[in-house]
Length: 86
Image (cartoon, rainbow, N blue to C red):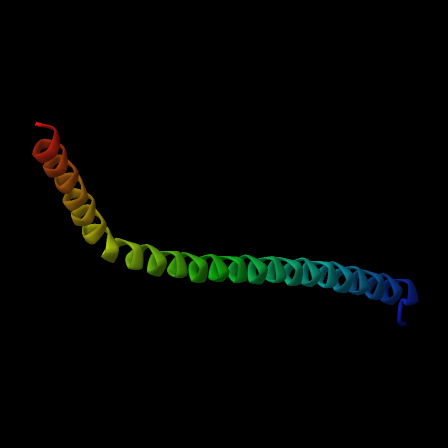
């Protein structure tokens, strides 16, 4: 004879396992969403860093000319001071 209480107990255990699995799946989904958000933030940071690097590279190209210009202006000032006030 079939034991109805045993079948009901098996069904209850099966439902409990299904609920636990569902909770685990939801936790994994949340973790995946957090990971996606983190990856997107990192991607944005990389893009911003590349833009800053390009900006610095452009500024660095002008740096030797600025130094040279400052040295020439300084030399001109020294020349004028020594020529007219010495």
